[in-house]
Length: 247
Image 1 (cartoon, rainbow, N blue to C red):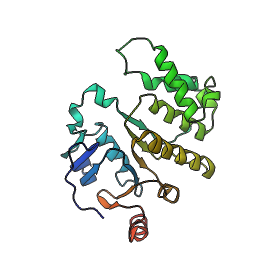
Image 2: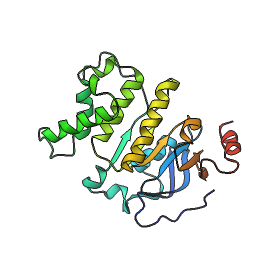
Image 3: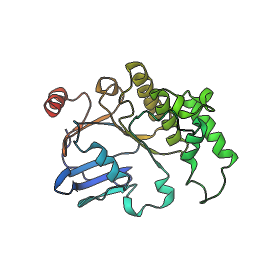
Image 4: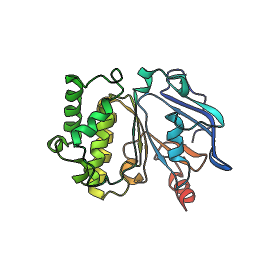
């Protein structure tokens, strides 16, 4: 189990002494977390334990009242655009309304916006990346279908493809398999592992499917407003810590 971390030069992400509140409610308390390049970290914790808030802080969407987050050694609030573009986020899996008109390929291409000059049209390279990532996630044959006509698992694969067209180095996934059946959960978990192994992405994933996840991640972080455990997913007493944290 890790103690307080002093982040190293060249770390992908450094969370240093971060405390976050919503009004009088403490969401995170004195969080210290160093993420090395190429880490594959699973984050577990009960509901309202601060997991999504941690992602919001890393993405610069929520300001801590204390502490700081750095990406590649630079404070998250002062990141240049080229560094911001190296970070991709996949939100929680929610069924998209069947009447949402956008086609699969259009949703994926949204991930390319912001990489070019503001207002400039999409280029041949953008469409090439879209096709490559849809093939990677196994959704190329569905590219002309409205995304609302797909199953929840298929929609989640499309959202992963949308994050990948940004060509990120850091990928944050917030419960990517919630409300999905075991078969598609296993497929998406294997897909995320392939991304780590084949592209050497730095991955942080919030996930309750620890039995699947623990076979692939190199670190497990158990969070309940503060870090309860940070270490090997197969470390001594991990199951006891998980049980006491959740129950």
